[in-house]
Image (cartoon, rainbow over all chains, first blue to last red; front, side, top):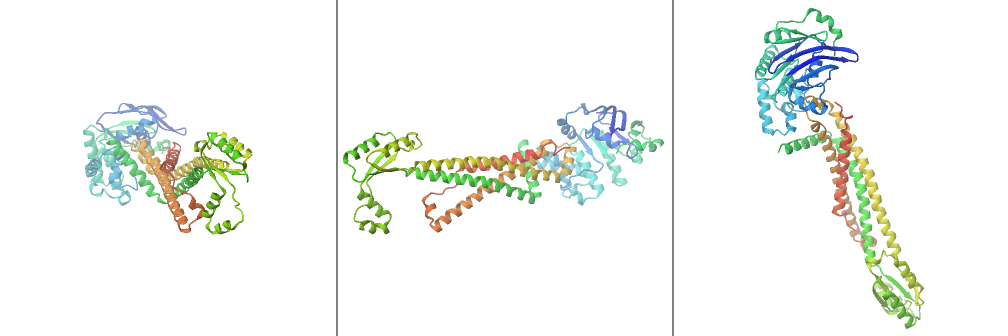
Length: 236
Length: 301
């Protein structure tokens, strides 16, 4: 489902990621961790082609993302769900619109859109706020709207960047349970987080970014002690 | 069905965008209405000048004034020359008495004065109606020259040169209208492009999000192009409506003031085809403006 082969990323001559190689199978749930600025977001952004690798190859769902022509990128992005660290909600749209905005233009009837949105928002306990604007929601609620938007299309791949950063402990674990369920239904889930407690309690495979390289870690694997010394090499 | 739903969604998005930036949209529509209105005014003037030409042409006739004391043989020869020409449709002889009676009928207040004159000052004449299709013929000037050179003729009056000049003016007004239309449509397109570009700047954050969640390019660019199209069309419709109001106002003024000059001519509004053409100018300006605004450099991801 996701395959990285010797991927490197450079910003203005500075290496952020180097020789990154890993694979994630269909339906697999895995964490990506590392200190702030380790390149987690950059790695995730390369999966949905918001960034291009400087070297190496990325294959997502059988498609070579690194060499993909720009015209095919929207379809790639629609095949996956992405939860952004800063939510990226449409500020002037309601929760319902945010969750189903793209579907509206793909010809999905209004009733069907509403039904899908309701079901997905129910999963994140926000079905009662469908008419609210993002500015009327708390940070945690906005994060859950972003989560609902990522899930509404039943994606084959879910990529989430710090999806529980603004959620309380209970809700964060609920969301993780949801991710596990989704992965059990065949969706590959890749979650970037630095919440070691969450990684431990969820008990899944974990990739740790260290000095721009991926270190395969076990569930119990915490940040390696030297990681904090390599932060200056990392990307924004 | 899916296509229709998508198109409806794009239109609703476009209108939402226009309403959201209502001040800029109103200004843009007003500017387009002025531009298209100017073009329409040109066409309206040209259309009415054409009407004037038609009216004058319908009533045009060659009047040949005969010398006083012309002989019957000379008069008969002149009539033969006229009759033999293929350019002549009808011919009528007007005696001095008939001419005086006609004058008295047209200017009743001057009739007693005309009657009081010791001699009849009105000359005998021949009124020749030319075949309408012959008016633009190159043979007309030669024919008129022949008539003027005839020994029975004192003077020949004919307005063909004036009509030709008027027709030339109509054609010039039309051509100028098209040049003006091209320039102002281009100007309107740039106005729309700038307004749409400003709207794009206002929606930059939304565009970024839409790209990241995989919105097709058509969805990102489509509403802006449709917004431009709507602005162009609304501006043109406003221009045509405005011209119609002005036209009705002129008619009302002519009727109220009993304006003798304008009252002679039937003032008319633009034909349907020209009104549609103006709407087409607006639509073209809108689409071109929209497309200019959504060029890749303005919408770079």
